[in-house]
Length: 161
Ligand SMILES: CC(C)(COP(=O)(O)OP(=O)(O)OC[C@H]1O[C@@H](n2cnc3c(N)ncnc32)[C@H](O)[C@@H]1OP(=O)(O)O)[C@@H](O)C(=O)NCCC(=O)NCCS
Image (cartoon, rainbow, N blue to C red; front, side):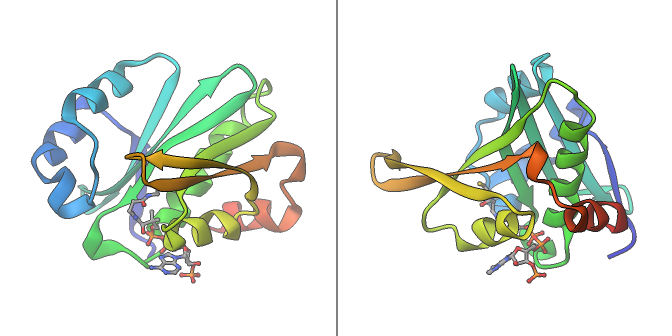
């Protein structure tokens, strides 16, 4: 999909999607949590837009030498069209540009195969498991990408997206 554009996410982007976070994006984030995240100086959020309409978003939280992916979501009607990959590439690019960062880490629900496949595509490796992390029921898989392990093929993939 070649008409996807990535921007820094703003409060007006959030305003645009605040009422459809659950219905169109399956996101469980509370609007106030999201707003605080956008205003947090340690966070960086990006949006993917097609024809000026938000079709996805993703965020990072910087913790000393690690970037934590807090969220990455594509609108339901736009999934499997490479938008998640474009968002993740951009997050990796942001982390690569920060000399303090050694790794990128995230938690993903053990039932969330789509997201795990997306991360595997970018060479993230499973490094741990948090039992009953989600609602005291589902396990979280912890996945990490070490910056030194970013292969040339991943770099090429990022540049070509
Ligand atoms: C995970 C998510 C962001 C992927 O977004 P997307 O725009 O569909 O991703 P892409 O089209 O770039 O797909 C990238 C790869 O992920 C994998 N993938 C994506 N959806 C998949 C699915 N339903 N089943 C299996 N693999 C899937 C594939 O390997 C795919 O590569 P391919 O199309 O070359 O086979 C999207 O499914 C989503 O928003 N889910 C709900 C929110 C969420 O769970 N976020 C992750 C929180 S940790």
